[in-house]
Image 1 (spheres, rainbow, N blue to C red):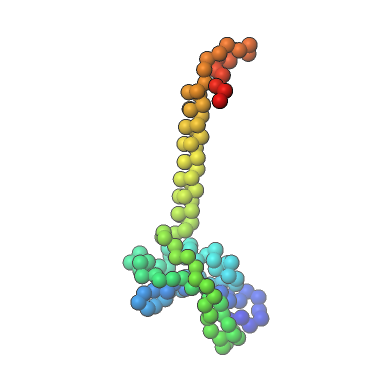
Image 2 (spheres, rainbow, N blue to C red):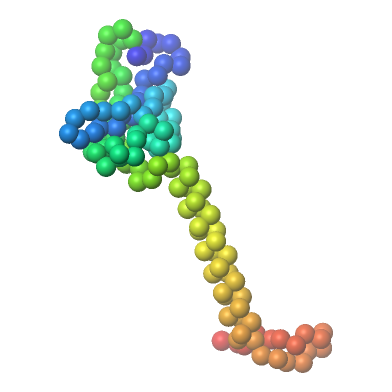
Length: 131
């Protein structure tokens, strides 16, 4: 599709379905733009019943003139495992944050359990054990 003009949509991601067929996921000006967008498009374009039939996702680049050329395979991209990567990333980061908060709470309660009462001059009654 490139004709020397800026803004050409020279890259695309295509889902390859079994036994045959394909679905266009997205197009973009650069491979990095397509890589960033294809997983989000996955949930919008590929129906639930078609997801198990996706064999691969092909990153393709337009070769030739705008009016005469063809799409050429460049490499395979990872097939998303969820409906929408944005949702799974948000859910994953929330789950990680929850796990970190729980781990911090557990370590604080363990360190409080290891503390022994001691009189200090500043009025504090707890002192952590020396390991």
